[in-house]
Length: 171
Image (cartoon, rainbow, N blue to C red):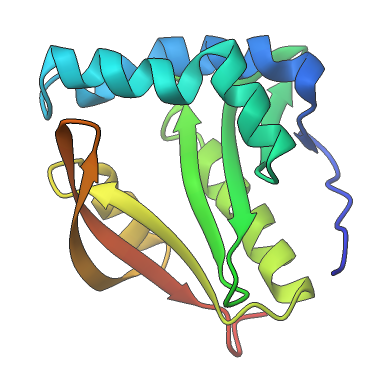
C-alpha cells in the first residue's frame, strides 16, 4: 500500500491532535444533526464517535484522520479507511460552520481522492443521512447514489444514502 504524504494546510492527524478533532466535532456535529435525529440519539452517537477514547481507538484501528490547519487553527477534518475491496470509505468529514463554503471540505475530499488514486482504489465511498443537506455538496463533488441503507446502531437506526465516486479515469 502506498503511503501518501499530505502537503500544505492539510496533514495527517495523530493521537496528539485528538483534542483539535474534538474541537471541530463540538462546533459542528450536534448542530448538524439536531434537526434530523433525536437528542438522545445524538448524545448516544456522539459519545461513541467523538469522545477522546473513541477517536483514539479509531486511530489505533486503522482510521486515518486528516486535519486542515490554517494559522494554527484547525478548520476541519476528514477521516478515511481502506475497506477489504480496496474502496476508500470516508466515515467523517466536518468543517467548522464559519469555515464552510470556503473550499475546506472540497480540499479535504480532493486529498482523499489523491490517496485513492495512488492506491488504485476504484471508488471513494461515504454514507450520509438522507435528511442531511451535505448530500448536495457531495453530489457537486461528483458522488452518486450507490444505495439506500438502514443500519441498526444501538437502539437507533441510521437512515443513510451510500454515495460513491468512481476513481477510474479520474486522475
